[in-house]
Figure 1 (cartoon, rainbow, N blue to C red):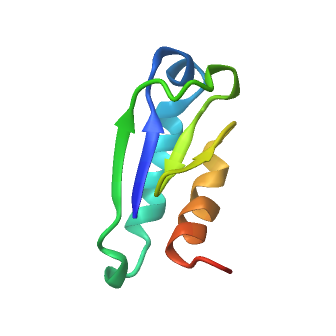
Figure 2: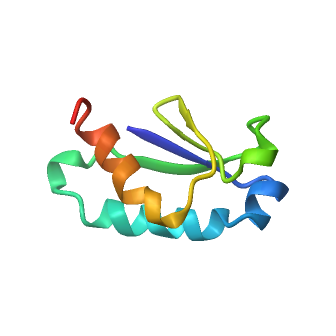
Length: 81
């Protein structure tokens, strides 16, 4: 699974660093069989007014807060649940 958090200026100001930290913490709690998790930053996703913008395996999520990281990660790791 690939998670990309926008770190462009608008998303940065809206809390992207805290969202990244929340994903890092959520990933660290995942079982080792989910080791293929990749977290990275990206630049503008053309939804600046709706930041923080996150893509999980290409799927776009807007207005992401640190509290949402765990559920977005679980949704990607366990699709359909």
